[in-house]
Length: 165
Image 1 (cartoon, helix red, strand yellow):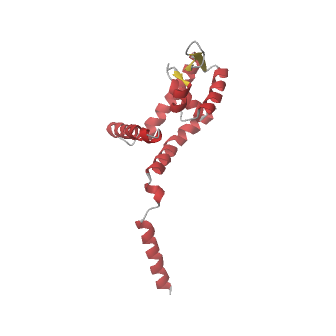
Image 2 (cartoon, rainbow, N blue to C red):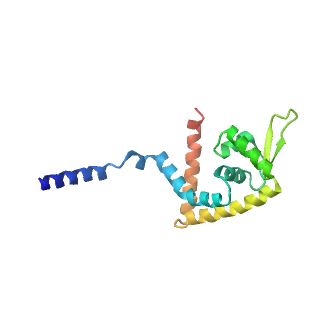
Image 3 (cartoon, rainbow, N blue to C red):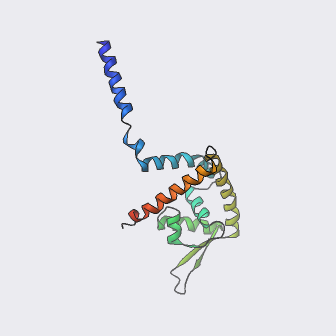
């Protein structure tokens, strides 16, 4: 009886090892896991500074002196426009960003960093660059560049799918 149970356990272990769970080989899951693992420590550093990930994305997207409309900025920050608008309200009140109307009818709004926003962003960008160096420290320069290029290509090639084309 014991030998039969051991044999049965060995067979179940073999089948488990032979067929990995779906998510372990599913690209989107692997990408999400990689992003979470690579960014967790940096997000914790931001939190220590009192900066949310959403705020960081806004500051980074405008750094050092870019001007973007709200739609472009929402896309860059991976957020919805109403959420971004609330975040921008807070950043404008803090004096880190400012709004400027794009045209005479005042419907188009551009966002840019103020001098204080640029100074704060410079500190966070320096932290981000240091964290990126740490994340990529086991990769050669060519491997790191290849990884980034492969991900950029994935984004470009996936764009028609996300737009419904």
